[in-house]
View 1 (tube, rainbow, N blue to C red):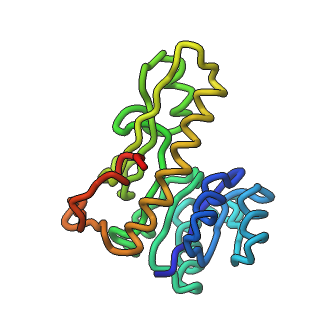
View 2: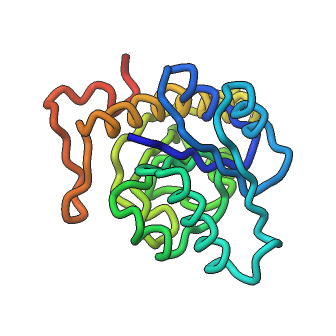
Length: 204
């Protein structure tokens, strides 16, 4: 399948995806000059920047995004630091084919600054979630989660680093399973082809 990765930051998850050997056909960023674009260039992957300020509204932005994805024959989309809420224009064009990585155990701490909010609440456990994207804010069906402890000795930085490490392990595993059609969405229900679900929870 031809995958696009939508980004907006340093690109550590994009690097982890590529390090796993996963094939990426296109990288799109909503911010200019970010590290993820440099990583795409290093790997010879076509990459584009779509700046929100270049469009009158989010609907026009998403129509341009769909046109770009179509131009590259993209079949599946992975969101890795793409901090924009996709409209129905995109979601309806790619039903059951868009997945997002979120740094919490959804439905806890949806939206922005999830790590900081969990740390401020002094949770004992947080984690990461990979889910299908719907028209809500981090509300789509969950594919896999990996729990991450918060130790009493943690600073925000050490806690965040442990969560990012879990992201780098889990997200490539899920993308490989989706690409192999071992996981899919059917009528809003996540389906798994294999009874062995060890990869789902970030275990080796």
